[in-house]
Length: 260
Image (cartoon, rainbow, N blue to C red; front, side, top):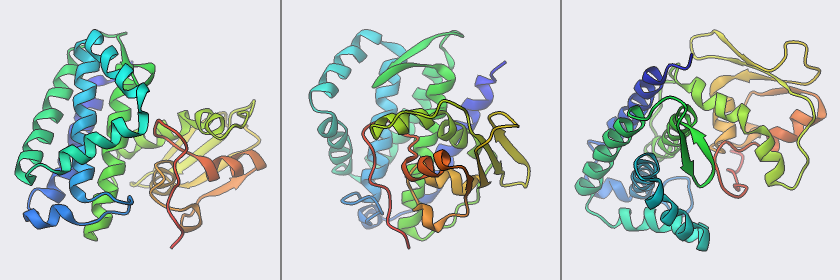
């Protein structure tokens, strides 16, 4: 059984963790540049607030979301960018309050959905669990950008497993996004969790493997660090290709980050 309540608690905790980084920033601090080109801290939070609001519509009004989807398909890049740009133009206190309110309402909306519900999204519809995982992954990834901008060190938590899970599950998506045929067989992915435990996916007897720290894997699949800067090991040519193109988030292939 999937523990949706536990997953939602992790999603709330991820938002709270990022909230703690920005809550005390002076207004000028919201204009601090982040590693995402052209995006300040305000853009990062505005993007999360905007996406949370899209998720609320998806979870509560499928008809209205269909209208949003048509608008997005007409201008995919611009549609997403406008949400960040418009939000970043708000007063920081207004933006922070909007993001906080949206996080609460999104969790409530997802918690109210019956088991088995498929939530429409920008791509295939998702189960409630998949939607929660996706929102946690994106919150964590954009939170990393904010932490990097502020020079802050975040302590990895057990909820990082959700990010690693979506990173594994999007393997074939990454191959297809680069015009490549996904491998026919599964890989074995074995990661060392923040507490030293082992997290594993795929057959134990798989011929091709990926191993390393869970944090490094999550930084890779969210394209927040260059592979050259991470302690990930592969055995096999296909996982070697995968780690060069891995992408846990929707949309066209990302450009990643330069090596340090």
